Length: 319
Image 1 (spheres, rainbow, N blue to C red):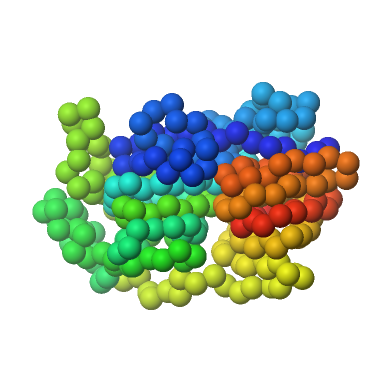
Image 2 (cartoon, rainbow, N blue to C red):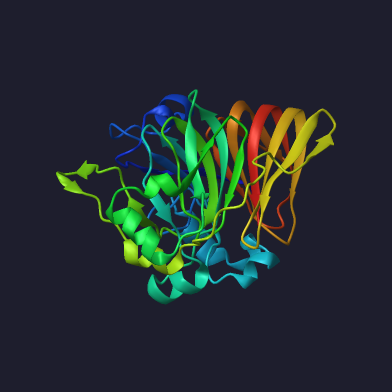
């Protein structure tokens, strides 16, 4: 059992930019690289293993054969691989959208719902995003606002800065704003209900909206004010481990590695490590992997202790 380095699935969406290829060295096969799915077993975009005897196989294929031994005891409560992690470059505004919860998504979409966390990696001056509603609304009021193209007038527009954290429960109206680069940790789902898309055209036609489904799942209450700072930091020698978000599907930390930091994958859960900044190496027993900005490593449950060496900012996620 060894750490598995993963190659991401790259997505080209209408709002995407070029920072993922320029700054993270991801393949630039199209003019835009909107998203890099750096941990994914979802059929819409699967990661490929780059090393070990599993090289060239999808992570889903590996885990399907290795089963719960690689996933850990906490993952046994999930019917499928529970987490999807993306890096997102929003050159333009994303659509105003909402995701369903598990019950609704399983009934109507044959997959899980989607609660997610955003960690702001970088942003242009003045960048902002939509996080929930600024007032209570009825379904009739919300639908009327969508039809009249005034729905943005009822949304919370939140300015962002590097290091902010947004925890977005299923049912919360939201939209990433232009000029934002972020990491997203989410349930492994690709269900999105758009309600507004700025009148954009794709191939000469407006993108599809899903207003009626959105009304079924949308939280129409005013969104409470939230602290968008990380939740607490634990010094570990010269390094630090900061909690970003925790829910029933995932727990994520930011690791600020200064020279050395150890991470343990015990029998309870696999661990995902994504290098967000810097360069270093990952050591496990007699094996050493380079670990550079943009690289993703999957630690199977029960692997034991690995050591990160270098100067790195790392996203750590486990269930």
